[in-house]
Image 1: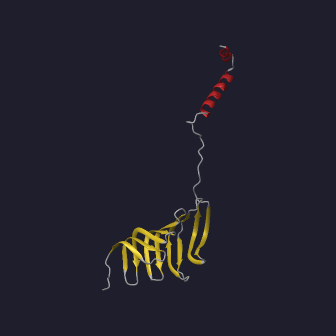
Image 2: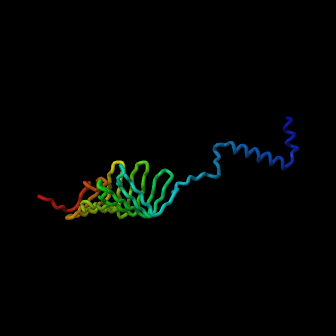
Image 3: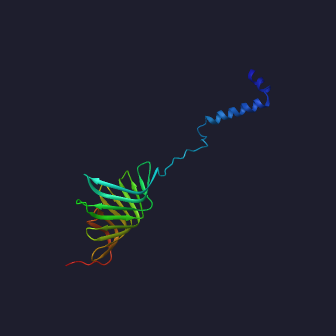
Length: 187
């Protein structure tokens, strides 16, 4: 064995270096050994804006005005409003038809919808009615507002309560899904 004799005459340093190089090659080629440094993908906001005012129009007519003290934009197009949101909806005559405000909001770009929570108030200016709840969803594509949470609607004559609500952007007509309480009915 011509190679074995050479190993016996190697210095101690050469033997250790050879063994370490061998193990390094063995572990470097082993797919089961993972890299010690894991790449961490940043998922936080890519942009932060203060005192935001966004206008949505259709056929050159103002439809919605969004105001927020703080807005976080994310890489995927989503947005978050951690200090609240105020939405103003306009009718075809450019008059304010209703307003929505909440302590927190989140926009989902894929669904083109907003989720709001925390002291949610919808004020229907045209009908003089105010709706209060803790959570609400607004689907911009379908132009509908809905919740499955407890709601209170104060009309000019009554206070209506119940679980869940569906309505359009103008907050009229609305439907309380599971009404509760005493109601007056005209004969």
